[in-house]
Image 1: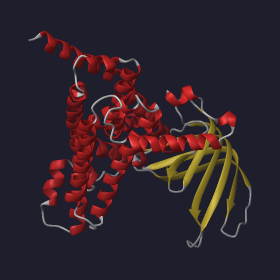
Image 2: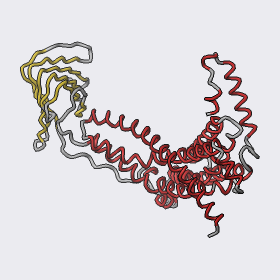
Image 3: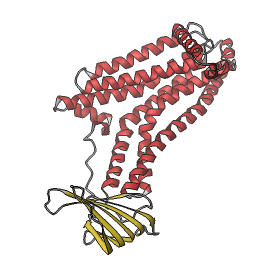
Image 4: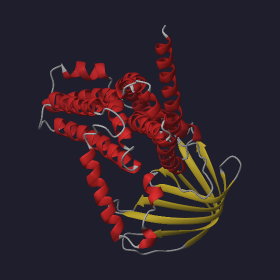
Length: 413
């Protein structure tokens, strides 16, 4: 291998090393933010249903492929953008261009990574997400419909089913000995035509689930019951002891089979079922889902062709303009895919040519931008857009009070 080829390979590995850290950090930050928001909602469901915390983490684990598919394109694009911006700022790009390397050759490592991530994304969208999505739904179904183990969490309302909700300020180690109990129960009135809402308070209580007898018994001591009918009439009755029972099933209903929703089907299953006779509406949804998944996954190939010219343009313009415009292009593209997918579901358009046409248009635009750009600030096709953005930003800055105006250093960072 010639010395020049060795030097070029060293540059390739250097570019990959620069890309690795921001890519991992971006993925970690985005995935953590998305998962934490969903985990909070899942724990709210857990507190209401009284299940085990392990089910929440199992559901969260099955959400990872879904959020990974969402986060991968943006994290990859903005990681490349940050690398190019840093190299331009530290004049490393000048050194590489001065050594005779073209912008197109410098970007080769990013393009190779884009191809690899495109294959990973197709696998995520096409084969991993359908199974993880179904697994998430199955665990959630088990959490909502599983037989309650007669344990509650202090200070939370538990819905035990059949119109009975209860809470306790203090709970024993086993979760069944209760103190300061509040119960809200909805039952049918004597005529069977209306309902009676009953609020019950008690000093102590105990929960017992008799699985063999199929009964759940809540024993209350030293309390007050206050039933309210539909006319709003309320009476208060004190009691020494009171048992509330309801039917209790130890077996959860069986969850539906996978594939009833097209989002739970793999690419092969979507294509095979779309080829079978069936309603046109169903076939349109299957084809829209099939083509949208493929185009979304393969679009990662073109992201280096977009990110590199955008990063190079920051040599002559503020960095935030390149970042903002790149974000607008990516969001507009993915929203357009979603829009065409919706039109395909409604049979307004043929989803295949429309979605693939959009993907091809995006690829041609990125390739044109990539090959027309000759260097830092040279041959930048979008320079007029950057000038317009800069003009609007300066106008807005002048309209702001002095204390709200960003400094020049912040604008260029």
